[in-house]
Image 1: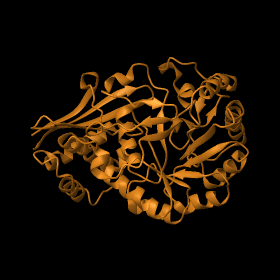
Image 2: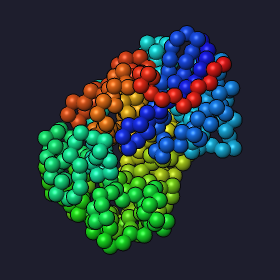
Image 3: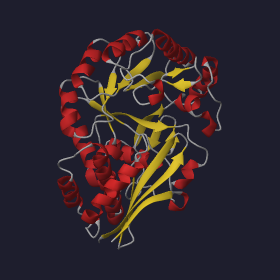
Image 4: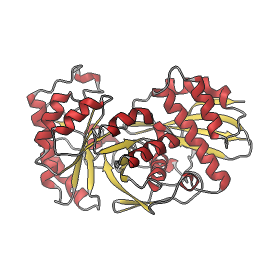
Amino acid sequence: MKIKNIKVFTITAGWREWTFLKIETNKKIIGWSECTDTFQNKNGFCGIVKDFQNLILDENPLNIKRILWKLKTKSKSNPGSLVQRVISAIENALWDIVGKHSSNPVYKILGKKFRNRVEIYWSHCGTTRVRTPHFLNKPAIKNLEDLKGLCNEINNSKFKVIKTNLAIFNNGPKIYMPGHKLDFENPYLKLNKNIFREFTLWIEKINNNLNKDIFIAVDLNFNFNVKDLIKISKKFQKYRIKWLEIDTFNHNELLIVKKNTKIPIVTGECIMFLDQYKNFIDKKCANYFSIDVAWNGFLESLKIAKYAKNKNSLITTHNYNGALGSFMSFHLATITPNFFLGEIDIDEVPGINKIFSKIPKIDGNYVKINEEPGWGCDLNENKLQIVFSAKS
């Protein structure tokens, strides 16, 4: 069997632009992976795929280690970032081919099954209804009073954990994201009193309107300096906070935050390699470590999960994606004994799931493991926009 073509597709899914990579073979076996990047760097992504194409075309797709060796050798002087995300997308699509070729789900090829279902939490809960409600057939959240309807919806679901970002309303409904959004013009991430008061009321309102057995995970992202992270974590200790999710590449700073709060800490979704995770895991600067299969690749994700287990640490799966990306993360959870909770978005654009051959079956706050070959999910490419194709 040989690789004969590589294609990249995108589709706008509300506030996100999902990206998918397809590998075609001369045996009509097709491999898919989801490879959505947070900030839509598809020009850079496709450029790297183009640079890699001559290393991939006509290779045997079943020989994944050889292909990874070639890609990592070419990029040895510039590893990480988009380069690694392209390599991961290629690797994950190859696992889909291997699974289909052997008529096995990916998890069965690479590990021992530890669970038949994966516990999940509702991600971006409330966030999308503040940020881009016009994409949804659901009530917009324009002020704190609008939270009552959302909380009633959560209370009537079976989710026990929801994750939200921080919303503010005084200058129009928006999600507070100075670590990413340039319109905040806050390069030093200084937190003023009014903003702090606003998003504290957001968390307080959610906390008070949810059933007492439902907990809140708060995604703080790259949005605050250490001093303010400590301030926030101390303030939030009086609420039912499952964890604070903090993105950083400085394990020492995160350790300072952890020592100053009783709230559990999650980190890791933007870290690429086991060698980088080791500092965070060894220092125990977080309670849970988040792994993104789409960005790290399945083999590296497994290495990170196994290292965390050896250090008595639990992992979560970061899942910023659609149905295919969700299935990919569930396969990792299936063979990871130290798995904690998985992420999934509930508020999606109406009809968007029609691009997938299968979507996760949610039963309360669990998803059943897919037993079909490969990832168990293909794409309807007629509904996607092609942005790159390489023919041998």
